[in-house]
Length: 174
Image (cartoon, rainbow, N blue to C red; front, top):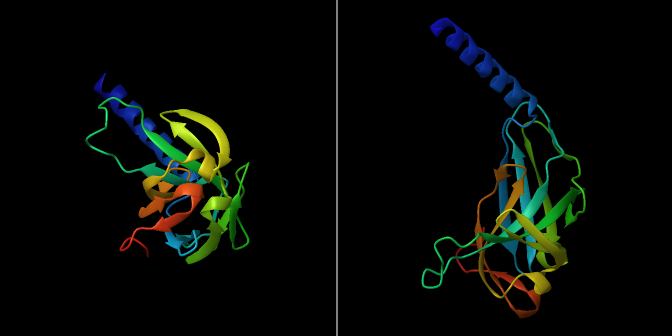
């Protein structure tokens, strides 16, 4: 019985290693920054000695800063997300995942305007309608981040103003 369990765990370990190796992304470093005028900059670094090629979903996210006095303990988590296509050196609104490529041992940058993306409210596991930023995201303070599949960037403190203007909070811009 002990030998069968050992073989089973060994087999599961080999299967897990094969799945990780087959995933295609060994490691990447993602950074996001916000420039004046509401332009965001995404930088993806591939430290591996092999090219990075992925069709994972890429998106910008705004996560509201919690307000302890009004937060309910079991309230669903709410974020605002915008799918982003990284093509050439521009970050644009996307409807489908595009191929992301970063050469071996290098980094790439893309720029886009936060207000030009198509945003949707994501509550727990539900995605609600897609619209312009000003129609979806309430005025307030947020954490801006960028993700590729399960990989996430740093977070930048931003303010969303009436009309959908986005500015960085002093001291949080890179």
